[in-house]
Length: 510
Image (cartoon, rainbow, N blue to C red):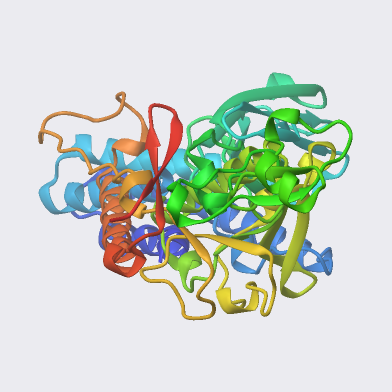
């Protein structure tokens, strides 16, 4: 719709003004200057048609420019000035007010001149023929919570006199929008631009290419947009510090520590075995030794150590998350990954052999990926944590092993546990505890500008689009909260993970 309005504004306002003011019965200024305006309009349209033909002849297979891109040159300010200039000429003809004719002639004339100049000196492929656009997100491999910065290097870009180079991009879907502007003094030189992107969020990110274009200094017209500078970077997750993780191993504790049973003397006897040199003599059972004429020692009754192997499974099976515009799905998955890796780290420190299991991209599909969590291979587990996304293809049942003696722990946010196995230990990560609400659109007074005077963000349509975008985020957030609602009765006896003063607390669900 915006493109159609910009293209229509090149023709319709001028024709309307010409049709009404052509006879010049009331306003002589418009009648006298109309030949000059008509000549400027013809030159402008000729320059645009020339660029259109030139662009089609030089069209390459990888060129994404369409026919309309070469003539969609008016910005919102330029289109508005065209209509206001034509309106001023029409009003002058109807009222006979000469000052309106001057305003209309100046408005239309300035747009004709700037558009012609932009099409002649900034259109086509010449400004980008020798240009090199290099973009980097540093550090390329960061850790969740680190500060990121963007570096954009422009080399040999031709920026003609009277124009500026503009660049706009976004590194992540919910990240900050970066904007740059370079004047004609930076033409054919090496320019380095930097921006602070804020704190890094977990994931393997592929930042889309930046939009670059040349526009006149008045902001009325621009050359076709060029997309350059696509870049990839990785942010490894940061495992959380988890309390009470030994509860996941059951009564056995871990490999090095076992729990003695509490029995009365009448509830059973101690196990015994033959005495071996080096045994504690205080454990010799003298009565039984006299009976069998052989030294035997007593062994205390205890619960056997826990299974030293654990499969730690991350449940990421959820459909439709890529269609939601709110941040809550990403925040919840980031929290689940921190809990998942935090539990793995704590268990590994106690001597338990942990295998991380999750569904991740492999080739053209989603497959179950297993990585051992070892001190020497911890980075492999972190890279797996950076790869995981919400995925609709691999259900939780495909990740849980059947007929195995290995203890299996599932980190999930599902509303209820599945019936795939009865011996699975559940760790629930509730959405309400790990996500924050979206910001509500601010209310502005009718006579107050929300942005500095002259900023394009003050336009009514832009503010209306921004408000609708935030309202859509709120609707998506409400729907996501309803989908992620947890029935704790179904998880009775399992564990729930909640934030607690910078750490993760595991508590038993009653």
